[in-house]
Image (cartoon, rainbow, N blue to C red; front, side, top):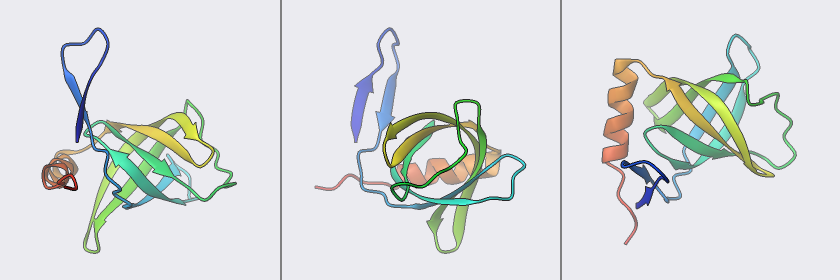
Length: 118
Protein backbone atom coordinates (compact mmCIF):
# COMPACT_ATOMS: atom_id res chain seq x y z
CA UNK A 1 0.00 0.00 0.00
CA UNK A 2 1.29 3.44 -0.83
CA UNK A 3 0.24 6.67 0.86
CA UNK A 4 0.40 9.54 -1.59
CA UNK A 5 0.15 13.19 -0.65
CA UNK A 6 -2.26 15.17 -2.81
CA UNK A 7 -0.93 18.61 -3.71
CA UNK A 8 -2.57 21.34 -1.64
CA UNK A 9 -4.49 18.83 0.48
CA UNK A 10 -3.72 17.78 4.04
CA UNK A 11 -5.27 14.33 3.65
CA UNK A 12 -3.51 11.21 2.47
CA UNK A 13 -5.00 9.34 -0.45
CA UNK A 14 -4.43 5.63 0.11
CA UNK A 15 -3.98 3.61 -3.06
CA UNK A 16 -3.50 -0.10 -3.27
CA UNK A 17 -0.75 -1.12 -5.65
CA UNK A 18 -1.81 -4.76 -5.66
CA UNK A 19 -2.56 -7.06 -8.55
CA UNK A 20 -6.17 -7.43 -7.48
CA UNK A 21 -7.54 -8.89 -10.69
CA UNK A 22 -11.15 -8.73 -9.47
CA UNK A 23 -13.93 -9.16 -12.06
CA UNK A 24 -15.84 -5.93 -12.69
CA UNK A 25 -19.03 -5.57 -14.74
CA UNK A 26 -20.20 -2.11 -15.81
CA UNK A 27 -22.94 -0.59 -17.92
CA UNK A 28 -24.06 2.92 -18.69
CA UNK A 29 -26.82 3.98 -16.31
CA UNK A 30 -30.09 2.89 -17.90
CA UNK A 31 -28.45 0.75 -20.58
CA UNK A 32 -28.62 -3.01 -20.95
CA UNK A 33 -25.22 -3.44 -22.63
CA UNK A 34 -22.80 -4.80 -20.04
CA UNK A 35 -19.02 -4.77 -20.31
CA UNK A 36 -16.60 -7.06 -18.50
CA UNK A 37 -13.37 -5.69 -17.00
CA UNK A 38 -10.68 -6.68 -14.49
CA UNK A 39 -9.52 -4.38 -11.70
CA UNK A 40 -5.92 -3.17 -11.57
CA UNK A 41 -6.03 -1.07 -8.41
CA UNK A 42 -8.66 0.18 -6.01
CA UNK A 43 -9.17 2.77 -3.31
CA UNK A 44 -12.16 3.83 -1.24
CA UNK A 45 -12.98 6.47 -3.87
CA UNK A 46 -12.49 4.62 -7.14
CA UNK A 47 -10.73 2.04 -9.21
CA UNK A 48 -8.62 1.47 -12.26
CA UNK A 49 -9.85 -1.27 -14.59
CA UNK A 50 -8.43 -2.89 -17.69
CA UNK A 51 -10.21 -4.34 -20.68
CA UNK A 52 -9.39 -6.40 -23.73
CA UNK A 53 -7.25 -4.28 -26.07
CA UNK A 54 -9.36 -2.82 -28.84
CA UNK A 55 -12.64 -3.03 -26.91
CA UNK A 56 -14.92 -0.20 -28.00
CA UNK A 57 -17.07 1.07 -25.15
CA UNK A 58 -19.29 4.14 -25.18
CA UNK A 59 -17.92 5.75 -22.00
CA UNK A 60 -16.82 9.38 -21.88
CA UNK A 61 -16.21 12.03 -19.21
CA UNK A 62 -19.98 12.50 -18.78
CA UNK A 63 -20.76 8.80 -18.31
CA UNK A 64 -22.33 7.48 -15.11
CA UNK A 65 -21.89 3.73 -14.79
CA UNK A 66 -23.60 1.02 -12.80
CA UNK A 67 -20.79 -1.19 -11.50
CA UNK A 68 -20.67 -4.63 -9.93
CA UNK A 69 -17.32 -5.65 -8.43
CA UNK A 70 -17.20 -9.41 -7.75
CA UNK A 71 -15.12 -9.72 -4.56
CA UNK A 72 -15.89 -13.41 -4.06
CA UNK A 73 -18.05 -16.05 -5.76
CA UNK A 74 -20.87 -15.26 -3.32
CA UNK A 75 -20.50 -11.49 -3.03
CA UNK A 76 -20.41 -8.44 -5.27
CA UNK A 77 -20.30 -4.76 -4.41
CA UNK A 78 -22.68 -2.51 -6.37
CA UNK A 79 -22.14 1.23 -6.85
CA UNK A 80 -22.50 4.07 -9.32
CA UNK A 81 -19.29 5.48 -10.75
CA UNK A 82 -18.23 8.25 -13.08
CA UNK A 83 -15.84 7.56 -15.94
CA UNK A 84 -12.81 9.75 -15.19
CA UNK A 85 -10.12 9.20 -17.78
CA UNK A 86 -8.40 6.77 -20.08
CA UNK A 87 -5.28 5.54 -18.29
CA UNK A 88 -3.78 3.54 -21.17
CA UNK A 89 -4.86 1.83 -24.38
CA UNK A 90 -6.49 -0.93 -22.35
CA UNK A 91 -7.42 0.69 -19.01
CA UNK A 92 -9.40 3.55 -17.52
CA UNK A 93 -10.19 5.10 -14.15
CA UNK A 94 -13.59 5.50 -12.55
CA UNK A 95 -14.63 7.38 -9.42
CA UNK A 96 -17.28 6.01 -7.05
CA UNK A 97 -20.06 8.61 -6.83
CA UNK A 98 -22.88 6.73 -5.08
CA UNK A 99 -22.74 3.79 -2.70
CA UNK A 100 -25.50 2.67 -0.31
CA UNK A 101 -24.66 1.80 3.31
CA UNK A 102 -24.67 -1.96 2.81
CA UNK A 103 -22.29 -1.81 -0.15
CA UNK A 104 -20.14 0.81 1.58
CA UNK A 105 -19.67 -1.57 4.53
CA UNK A 106 -18.78 -4.37 2.09
CA UNK A 107 -16.23 -2.16 0.31
CA UNK A 108 -14.61 -0.93 3.54
CA UNK A 109 -14.43 -4.49 4.86
CA UNK A 110 -12.92 -5.69 1.59
CA UNK A 111 -10.28 -2.91 1.58
CA UNK A 112 -9.40 -3.47 5.25
CA UNK A 113 -8.77 -7.15 4.58
CA UNK A 114 -6.39 -6.52 1.66
CA UNK A 115 -2.78 -7.04 2.59
CA UNK A 116 0.21 -5.96 0.52
CA UNK A 117 2.54 -8.71 -0.69
CA UNK A 118 5.79 -9.18 1.31
